[in-house]
Length: 241
Image (cartoon, rainbow, N blue to C red; front, top):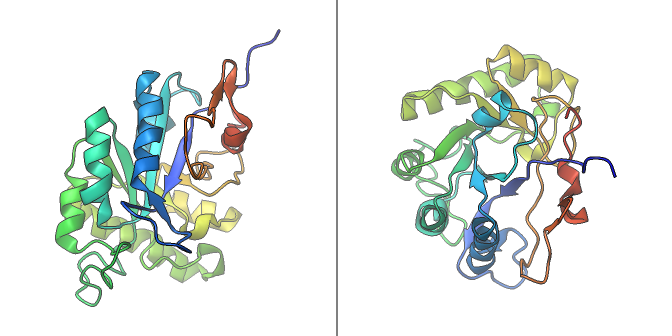
């Protein structure tokens, strides 16, 4: 037999809530999230950042990446305590032009999917093991912007987040997971080292694919086979192994 196909699982979450209301297709249940973390913890997986991923072989045994898009306040109240319980970190992608430091939203509209206030974002960014990435300035679809607008979305969001965190922002998530070759060139020009997408990729570090977590997650869903990830995770196959 040949060597098994190798993968580094990269999960994409948004809002994680204690109770998912009927018809809410956006929130992920906290109980399912904890079971997912338990699964990886029992198998002695460790988390890595996108920065580490870019500097390592495209597959790292027993490593997993958890990413969270947009910037929801439940990252502090629900997600972080569970991550810290297992000694896991995460990458937090947020778009500061809409909510971070913007009094208009002040925690968005409240409710289970409230967005960060500036203070909540700073708290989240300071938590152990949290890597911060950009997500554009206003969550516009990059593929629909002209060159000047795209450059501004990438450069301004990077600067705002660097000013807030005091750290270099080296990774970006394409809003809605959408990108094209023009977007990739703009990301490189803006000084990012990696970019994550949805479930598509051009095989480079500037369109790293991610997978949505299984819903619901239970022990009955075997994430891995002995030789690698189960079919559920095959969207994250790395093309340049």
